[in-house]
Length: 322
Image (cartoon, rainbow, N blue to C red; front, top):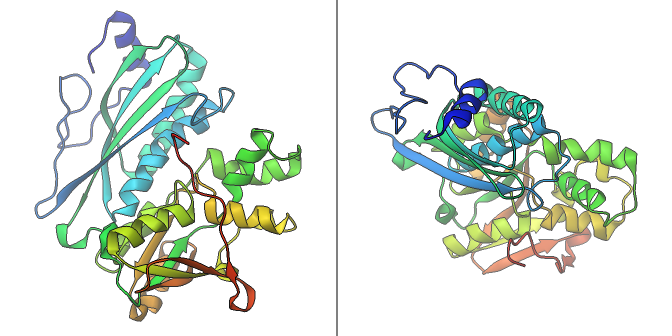
C-alpha cells in the first residue's frame, strides 16, 4: 500500500494484521504469497460502486462481508482454494465507525474462508465509496472448473436457493409495494451472501463446468452453453426457490428465480454417474444442492414447466450497461 500520513493511519488501524507464515503482507511495495507445487494461481477482481452495487445506507459490516464474498464466489466457481486478497478503497472522508464496521465484516469472512488480506490501496474519492477487491487462490490445472467443459448428457446442479436477493432488491428500489416482513426474510441473502467455497473445492476433478450465479441463472448458465457449444433443458419445477417467495405472483417468482442476480451460488455440470458422490460431498460440506436439468446437444436454453410445457423467458439477467 502506498499512502500519506493519514492514509497510513487508516491502513494501520483498520487493515493491517500479521500475514500468515510464508506470506509478506502490508508494508512493502508488493505482497508475496506461496502457491503449492503443481497448482496454478487463480485470481479475480470485482468493483463495487456506491449507488450502483450497494445502497448508501447499507450496514457497513454487511458491505465488508459482501465485498469479499462476491470474489470468494469467483474462486468457488473454479474449484479453487482461497489463498489471499487485496483491498482498495476510495472514500469521500474518514468515518471511523464506518471503517471499523466494514473491516470487521471483511475480516470475519476472510478468517472463515482462509483468505487473508495482504495488501491494497486507499485514496480519497470526489463523491461516493468505491471498493475494489482482488482475490487469489490455487487449483490443480487438470481440476479447474471451466465454463467450456460441459458435456452432452451432464446433469445441471445449483447450490443454495434462488430468487430472494432479487425480491429484496425490488423492494428496496420501490419496484414492489412495501412489505417489511418480506424484506426481512429476503434482504439477508442480498446483503450477506454465503458462497459455498468449501463444497466447491471438493468439486474440482468431479464436476465439469461451473460458474457463480451473479447476474441471473438463465444468463449465467448461457455463458456455459456458449463456451461449451451445447444447450440445456431446465426443469422449472425443480428449481430450489427461497421459502420467502411462496405465495408471491407466479410470474414475479419466475423472473426472480431465472433472471435475478446477486445469488453468488454455484451452477455446475457433472456426469450422471457422479450424482451419489456429489450429494455425499454436499452433505459432508453441509451445502444444499439441487439437480435442475441436463446438458443437450441442441443449442439454446429450454425451460420446461409443469407437465413439460415450455416457459418463455422475457427478462434478461443483469447488465451493467443496460
